[in-house]
Length: 342
Ligand code: PEP
Ligand code: MN
Image (cartoon, rainbow, N blue to C red):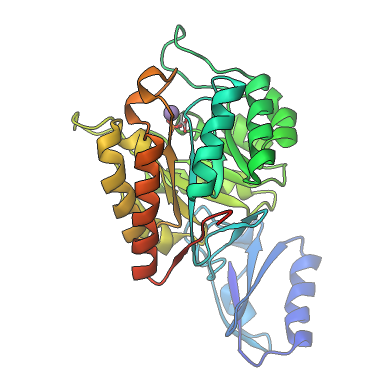
């Protein structure tokens, strides 16, 4: 349930509502904007009547939230959530670019790619260490060593690092080595993993499942938010459709839909969606134009010899060209792309 206060409601009036709800065992999620204050109420609100709260002094409205993803819904939290990772903010005016290889292949390559992409605009570095590969015979990632190399690359360049987690037992490793923990498309509905990740305080990046609806995706985000962590970034990465000319079908329509339904930031990964590097740049441009808060792209210094996802990886030169375009598009939209170290 949402309880909205009048603009001139006093602290004492709000406290009365607060005390009533706490005394009855409900959890309160306050949200204060410039022109409003509201309480999102969590618990078995079936027992509560909105009419009853409208009778409290200072209350202007009370209504039930229809969405099952309450904490992640825009009605619970009308303002945009900004996720801060060091100096980087996702969900504000800034457009954020996350770049790096699909997999951390060895210490030198992640160092080299990071030193190439960060000065040209990557605000964060990505690199997989535990890879969800379709074939058990494909390169599976370097595991812990990969996270260590990624951390070193992050420390050297000053850019926060993002990597995908696959298993509950690796949570302590990820808490130690990465700044943002990615939950991949294949694990979007691994509810056991989501429940455990709900206990941590680090920022989380939740990719859309390969055949998940926006509703299912937001419900998965709700698992992550269920213990109070609001540092969640959503990432559209394409869904499976009948179309075979691209690896997946990039559903950019989810961007404005998410913006309407949720306060969480949303970024787009055109690399996994398109599967071929030549299609990545046009869709990265379109993602920003559609209102995404940033993009995540795969970059490799030698895409033809990459151990995973070479065909969709941008060369360092192509990445540089992309960042110039992102800069122009961001400015045209009144947003800002801040290059690190320049
Ligand atoms: C990735 O980002 O490396 C990845 C495997 O992406 P997805 O989960 O979207 O397939
Ligand atoms: Mn990949």
